[in-house]
Length: 451
Image (cartoon, rainbow, N blue to C red; front, side, top):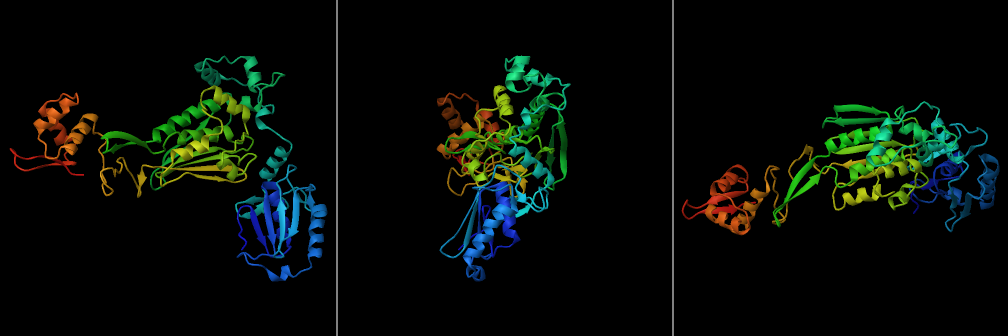
């Protein structure tokens, strides 16, 4: 049974669609086309019975007369034991590839998007041309040369680095002839880079809508400040140890890493914006530029590629990057063992990351966390105002069911916690009364742990 997916295309016969699919794989990724197969994966017998020599000649003519530039060495084909024509296509370096009769226009340039083949846009064609010529945006000379670097200079001084002309050249901010590069432009105070930041309520109405423009350094600081504000912290109490553990909406370094990835891996040649949107149940980060010189599968396995190598180097010098190329692995590690997992998606021109909010459950933002440490059925909602003293009392009661206040005082004293009976009663009454109960008479009764 044959299955169609991102890298496999199924075709019944040698129709125009096969040409388009070949061009799409040449422009986008390595892939295979199976000709003689129905959409459901079964064999299409009319094609299987056709003369293989005739179809062999037809494919050979396409490679030499129909597709341009010549895809020499990039296309291999054979008939397998089922009689299916298998066409293996490698992504080429001389992109865009197109149907010769129509020229390098959207009408004849195709790309692969997921499981489908579609016509490329003019921007995509331009990007392919630039990439095939090994064009590197950050190294090109900036059209704007009247630039200042107050924000960058301030960031360098905070890291005990002097922003001299010599450093600017070595870092790639300036060319050897003294002209500023595009890297210099996006780091300058005059940069036109824009990052859009939004926060929505549960009905997706705007709570906050901002646009940050200017030096990439300043923008990153402002965006991180807003993101940190929305990364809520809740307390989880482990009743095996009676210690508090903090849980973040976006755990570990996940939020920081994915915002940082968007900044350093964006394609600034594409005139689009980085967008960071906080919804009630997730954060979505979009950056212009698909995956650079790799597939999603390779990136998920840890392959490291850099569209803006010099920008990455500067962010590293400023202490913003801990390890090159570890953003996605660290994010996945932060969500390890969680039911909700990050989602990574890429198109030819954009990269998307969706981070689940771990403190969002059943449509409501929770500030309390479920605990199952006593037994598998225990669900306890924790009041974030419970302090370590309150936890100590809970622990004593849990370990000594039916204990009196005077005895609690003595138990605490053996652990070096000196407290009056009034202070203990106040904690019981105001902080932990929903987790314990008093049973029996005033003379013979005591406190029991109830959760």
